[in-house]
Length: 257
Ligand code: NAD
Ligand code: 0WE
Image (cartoon, rainbow, N blue to C red; front, side, top):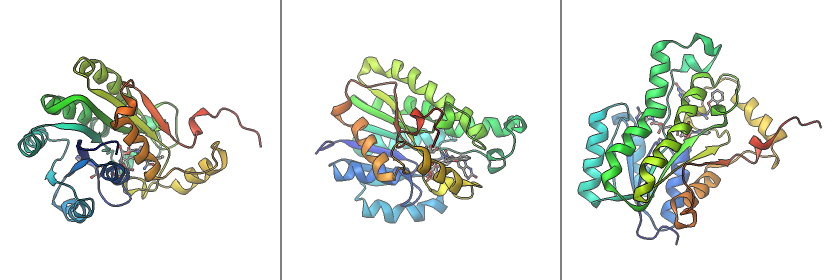
């Protein structure tokens, strides 16, 4: 098994549709020990049964917008495990109002919120966990094509994901000398909690089904397996990179018929 004896800390599992759930399952099925975070009591009730199902070692509170929570998370993991091999960051948030209409209308507050929770949190997470991460460790975050090209309504999240992708490169340079790799998976659209209530999401899914080379949408299992590769020794030569798991969509230019 690719991750026997490895310890993975996973942020961003909300329910069994979450990309983090697909990743956790792939890791668990490959022998990893798992720890899961929850951002507040409301989600704790959803996470704990899934933690039991995934045989997670423990769960812990962490709202990534709070420095105290991040410090406490590192303390908890350090206390329980003494270290960690894999960090998964599958967290994003923007105000719903900022995911529709014109990007130009994004408020200062809306901009700050999206960048704080969706991009800065990876930097903070890497910093507090740096002393705990082992040589050969792997940090994985989740991004979307809207970081690189304009996707209608993705708006401030596109800008936040651009910052996240740039952070992946800078963090890879900071942590590389310690043998720790930092990469992102750029997933195609998937109907998760974070996609629910996005107006016209079914049209995005239809578009990918029609125009991606594989003529389909991707699943959380496919994303989980790509994350497994990035977490495993199979990818020891890869850092600072963006791995697309998007049925090939990002390679498209003009397509006629
Ligand atoms: P999801 O709703 O299941 O996961 C998002 C998670 O972010 C939730 O678990 C939520 O609790 C967490 N979160 C939000 N604010 C937080 C905070 N302040 N502190 C801690 N956690 C917080 O949806 P998902 O689609 O699985 O999203 C996971 C990641 O994948 C996100 O980064 C998202 O941008 C990215 N992504 C999603 C898609 C898609 O189409 N679903 C595609 C590409 C990338
Ligand atoms: O990254 C995302 C979604 C992130 C997200 C979703 C929400 C919905 C609920 C961040 N914040 C919030 N805030 C909420 O209140 N994706 C890649 C999925 C997604 O979201 C879109 C997309 C796609 C794809 C929004 C508009 C257009 C396309």
